[in-house]
Image 1 (cartoon, protein in one colour):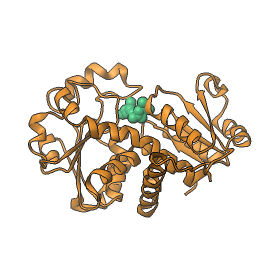
Image 2 (cartoon, rainbow, N blue to C red; image 1 turned 90 degrees about the vertical axis):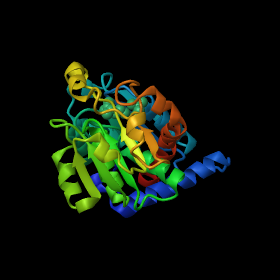
Image 3 (cartoon, rainbow, N blue to C red; image 1 turned 60 degrees about the vertical axis):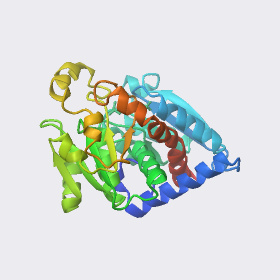
Length: 302
Ligand code: CP
Ligand code: NVA
């Protein structure tokens, strides 16, 4: 494993190795056991979109591993003034030991990896959010002791989270059911991948069908970063139908978890009632970004 660009690139064994390492690093941090695996190493973090969790967990994570993190706003870099990604990749490879990038086009992340010579980590694109889904799988396994054979459901927009959840959960041995409206389906490359899993994968327009007997229900915002101008049009499609609420939760298993990558819009994709009832799991999920990403950095940069 040279990069973490998207979960489609990883084998199931690589995903499990990352989850096991994340558990170990979490244990070490909680028990005050030194784990400076990346002493003297530097991670550059490029942000073309806002971030709370990704920014803080990567910067804290590289510090806890004995390294140093540089936070770089894409608009401050010359890349924001049109310097080609090919050149940016080759320059940053001369200074840094790894790059985390959050941007719009998946191609930019793939190009950074192709032209540079250091590991590249996708910190969210319009296509994928692999770091988040590693943390999600880690959280479900913590709460349920296993992943294989469990059923996950996703209610909402077929966005970066839906794409990465489908791939990550299926590769982890779970069943997956996605409820997305017409016109807002997951990426065709992801649906092609999922088609290989037969009845373990279901795409429906019905949240009730997706949620039935689920072990974990996921949702995400109706309009992602960069889609703010579509908010009203999206609300007209999603409102009143694609929401995780108490009525929907009654269809799932009684001990069904709820996960949300955050930020959450209460009253839109999830009710405040369901959010607060599952807040412990949702904030475990947010915490696990730190541990899962430390595992990614150790795996790629050590
Ligand atoms: N879930 C997530 O990636 O959060 P941020 O946008 O705050 O980084
Ligand atoms: N789908 C959301 C996820 C945020 C972490 C977005 O891309 O804005």
